Image 1: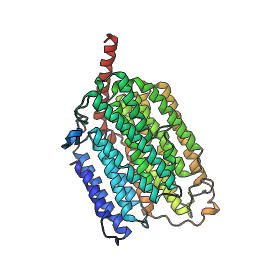
Image 2: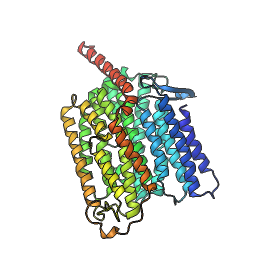
Image 3: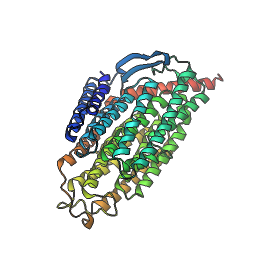
Image 4: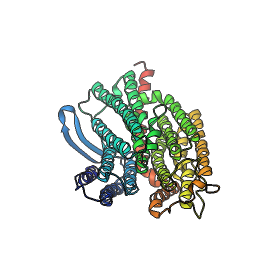
Length: 500
């Protein structure tokens, strides 16, 4: 059942890529949307059949692949990966639907988006370290090409920078995975057979360093963040939606699945430093966002700050904080995707994202009142206003992290206030006041432009009012994971106390 999620977009990419050269842009887009929708609907079917109370991997698939390397095709799904799979399916459909109908080389474009979905889906499903790495690297090439070919004026620079950073990330992660398997004496890369807790603490710390830095580049955390604003600014709107909404979550997912879960003793040892690192990312990202005049770059820097909340929650490693980390991933995916869609509409219709140029776009007669209203909703959600999913996720993160790291949590809460500051700057400059002379004759905004963002706005409000619908998938898995980690750490401390 899980392989369907990989095969459907893969078949779609092959059909589009090898179709006759004379097909229209609309036909390629329609075929891509059909296959992406099938994969998304199948994810919904799996979610309906998923049993939240079971903490083991569900719908598991196992197939011997390259036995000499210990590489097997092991797939599974649990409460940590399921919400991210649903998010990926939804945003892939939205990205395809929101793509420009007059693209150059549309067959190649839509094939790459579907291949990108294959890589992300496979990474979330993989229950084998080496298989995860293969899918993790698979998404690198499609995203590089999507930025380098269909990006802005400096797309070559941004794409190359992304490629270099992500390649370094992959090298560090692979080295840590190989070290975990070889040093622990495991015969395969399967997560179910791996026991890295028997390794000495110094070895665990070395392996964890590679995992944290590797996934920290992907998240990204300061100071490994510089590729992200460039990539967002140069990428087209649908690619920014996927980049912020889904691809950054591979980094936070990796920290939870392979860092906190596989190396709990080392994780507990470095947790105070990770929490401090989270504070730096939160405050730095928010401060940089305040200084921006490009709307897209402002939203990009906001992602750096909001991903810092996930690291804080993971460092605290309480059941409540880790639940908050997962909800923050989903919350940020919905909110950032919505904001990038809306900024894309503004740029498409007004021809600028510069806050020094735009003004009065909320004008009901000649402006973009609906787009402006949706951006207000997105800004409120990102700033953590009650009634939105952003408030729920951040509140759970802070409530779960405060007993463990009170100082770091309080400092991170300042980031929420700063989020309100830079979004108020954006709204005040671009949407209030008189319509500026540069954008007086705006093209009409159709509901096809507003629809995707409106769908995300509805989900943001629904999960803000009923967060239990989101938490029920994740809570049992997270609680079991954290309790298992605490047992390992307690046994280790007991050995140290006894002089063993």
